[in-house]
Image 1 (cartoon, rainbow, N blue to C red):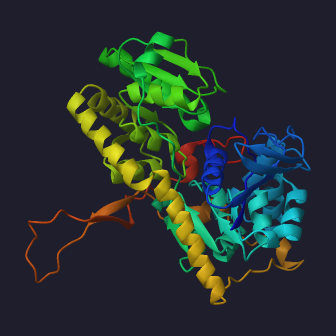
Image 2 (image 1 turned 90 degrees about the vertical axis):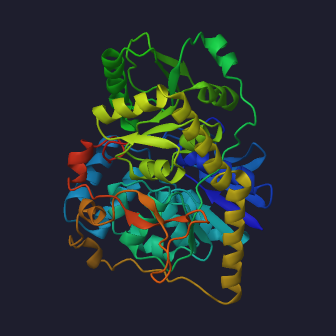
Image 3 (image 1 turned 90 degrees about the horizontal axis):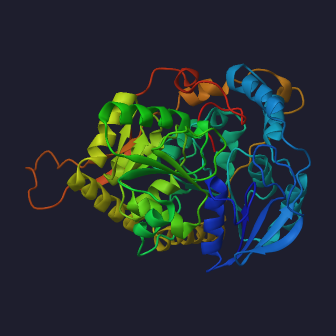
Length: 480
């Protein structure tokens, strides 16, 4: 089978977000199929400036074909377009202008798909909100498999997104929360879709003492792994952590792993180790009391899965539905929504060894059951077989045409914020199956739990009130 993976940027040194997700999927599917990555020449996600040469190269044994970006992104222009379509009545024409201003705008990539799409059996698009996914889907609708990597972001309420969710051949969701949000917005339950996420090559053995010695880390510590960015909740994390140390008197260090794009407090118990390769990263996580994930916006936390893979609990921002849902379904983490909750949950995890180890064991089992690579790859293989069967039966999806010249310019579309606000909020939580009414309770078998579309309490505040001002991507809070 010939597969294409289409993603906004791609490289071995890009160590997070949808781009790392795409690389992992491409490399693991390449063990079973012929895989080619189609991407841009951009390295930086703020400007999408062309930095890699166009053409073909090999990255970790996978063929990568790069296409130039026709225009760099100007954050102020993008923010202006975002403010209009997120908060005001607007037109389809303005949504398309917003999409182009976000980038990475690469007509050459879309032209390649239109002319060479027949050479691929299926084309996997990462991520839903970008130019290449929207226009690429329309170029090869019969082949398009979408990996949305969609966070709870006003971009998902933009009207041009729903026809894509209804028109692709299949969707590979990251989480139950993402699937519930998209299905509520797009009404696409008839489109094949599966919650799959992404795996990770977690080592069988780790050596935390090596990292302690190498970096002079003494005593207990918690760890944050990822881009150190205010949009990832790091500013709030620093404030909460410093306050916790002052009030509790605990002997605890916060270790940071990743590239920083914000100032890090000059505090003796906040240690920045910089970017690390996988071996060092896993050793650091394995020695931590817990991984802290302070982000407000995630479609799936890969580092949370990796922490569970090495048997460590997670403390997550409970205002992120996905993180909260992951903690509940795994029974391997706690979550907070305020400083008092942060202090109580952190103390429970780091000061109670038996509780800490129990959460860690649950996490390891959750990862083994749902996120090892054989499980992930099998879900993709099963979807390809399902689509092959549809092809044999002549099943196809309808592409909804764009409005005509005048209709495209009418400012009759609701603000994307309002559309998103109608989607269900809260984590999708396991529900215990109740015995039939005519039967008594069962005492012999373990209760069966399956995630269902049931959500926690709806936060009645608007997204603006919850998450503050917009970042350079034209969205609020969060980050990549």
